Length: 346
Ligand code: TRP
Image (cartoon, rainbow, N blue to C red; front, side, top):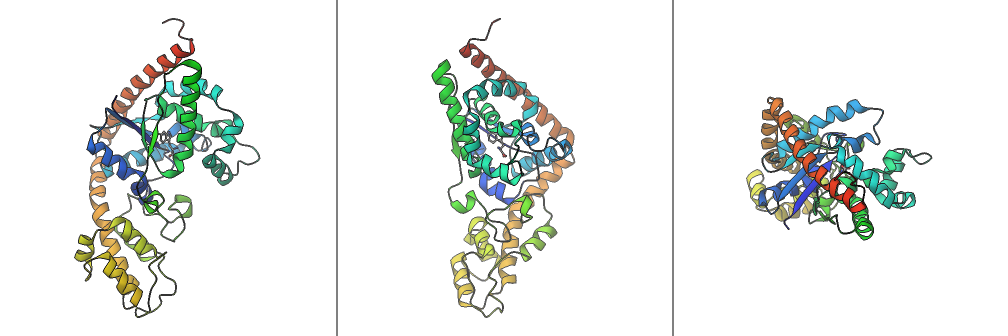
């Protein structure tokens, strides 16, 4: 059996460089390598509602931002079914049957859920829908028989939960569902890109992000305000490279070709050496990073602009992707009902 790839994002905000390096880049690579039978990318609007049920407008607005982000980084609708979670009713039905297989205490022990409950102030009273979203995520993945799931590493506990559901289901009702595996970037720094301010994570709530949709001016402003070495006051002072976000980002995003092109150094290592010795100013290194990021982001902006001007095409992409997703999920739901023995009219 060939690979089936599925992944998704909650449309609660624009996607940023952390998303790009943490998972979008992997998705585009996998899409282009072509080593799969089917590939799905889901906009998880129903999951987003579990903690934004009182603000559906936010989800609606960001749904379009997220699909534009996908298309702008090169997710190709000819190769990938992009679809909307809430349109696929079979996912909700699957969730209902899977809920029997997971205990409340197991959900409360999920590290991702634990953190999110704290962040949202749900400690005293957590909405059932929110606590249950890992079960619904198990439905998202298993409905497509996905075995490969390119995600950020915060999603690992959710995939573990999915595989527990799969094993329990198959044990009780017979072999039906498929276990999955996370596809993560190789290095720790890519798994969790720090914020512009040096905070451990690039995150919307911390206001330390460069968004994929940021203009050239915005990127420039943000790079110029990045956290470097607070003790590197004069250009002639020796500077620290570790924990200096500009070098951290250069490590992730640049190659030596670009360092040659945008500085007087022939490699990033050489540039770091000079910075450590003293005599290399922050403005200079920031300019290099700005150019490197612009090389990445400019083609994204062009694609985004095209689709912004052709929103009818975007709608069509979503509609067609959703139709295919519905077909596949319904087929799995039938198999699940048959396995349980509730396929009365078949
Ligand atoms: N939990 C993911 C997020 O927070 C979104 C998501 C929903 C997802 N269902 C999924 C990711 C299935 C991968 C597979 O963005």
